[in-house]
Length: 167
Figure 1 (spheres, rainbow, N blue to C red):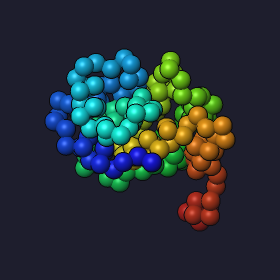
Figure 2: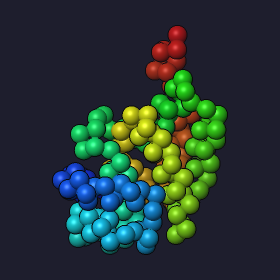
Figure 3: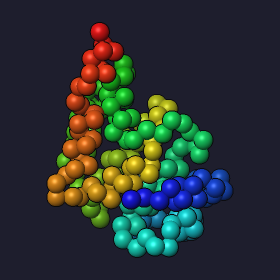
């Protein structure tokens, strides 16, 4: 489980430090520049040793939005809203479906694709809950693909609320 104090610490960074992390969104930890590394490790809980690359990705993504950006939605909920919006395209749905087929690897391919979609959400004024996103990234390569199934279900499955709104 991610630690809320981590994201609170990110919110207290200077504008320059947040900018360094924001510019690194979509970049693997192994390729980070010195300023972004310094900001990241200033906030990372000392107890976190495993999966630091995923924590780094979540930190960079968190810095795409202003600290006071509200409401922060889980990524899959924002994807759903974007798909349902009037300016959605078929190619966006294909990109999201393709994202579900990728695994987290050292080449950063998934991270690059996710970064592009999150930047699109930012342009459309959706705020992402990066704590929830971190939890999802930590479980992304699970054999049972529970994160991908959760995202697909939320993005594509009709529910009674949606049907009532459409009537």
